[in-house]
Image (cartoon, rainbow, N blue to C red; front, side, top):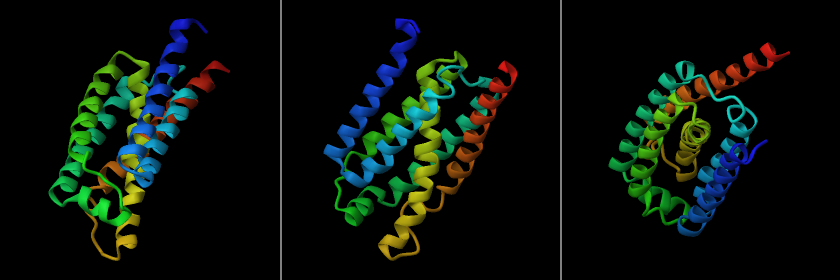
Length: 186
């Protein structure tokens, strides 16, 4: 492996570690578990799959962009229904960075779509992160939050199902692409 090939895993590992540190220190442990845990899982999924052989943009990009669109709709529901305040009250965490975080992540996710076209390794990591974190982990969390809060509705519950289902499909597609590569190499 050359220096150029080893650079993306090092840079992404540093970004994941920084994200975990930031969320833990500025939001709290529950948000860190969801966001940081998803980033760490996404890192290892990416490292062992699409880092070595980037995802086929034709197979992945349309579904990925659909998830990004669903996530933006979902985060709009969260913003309109005070997700940050309710999350903070439920877990005693300060989620005042929610609005800037939505804008930052939304922009990064859109740019990653462009990176997928060029089979950029960082874009491939972001695809894994979005599918695992905002997609699956966030979907599970949104069905647990109302139970913990003792209510039928928790901000974001209505629209979370769309990125959740699409993310499961995307993960399956990413893994199917990896399996096809392994079969054709053998």
